[in-house]
Length: 97
Image (cartoon, rainbow, N blue to C red; front, side, top):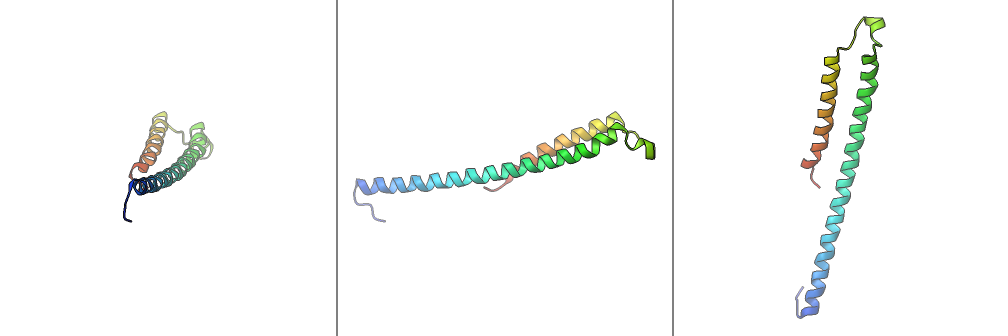
């Protein structure tokens, strides 16, 4: 494309701006898709943890196996759950958009 006058330069600038805006919109859409996928993963693991952890902490295994969950183990598992959720969220930083 040969630029001969100021109008051609203006049209070329408009074209470059449109391409840049398109790239930015595509990047934003990809980032939002990855974020929603990450939220769904974190919700799955949180529900899984709570479905297993709450009945065990309430003593459901005591009648069959005489096993009670120590509060220290409960606190440790809750901390590990939080670390897992945060590390899963930080995984987005390394994703290619």
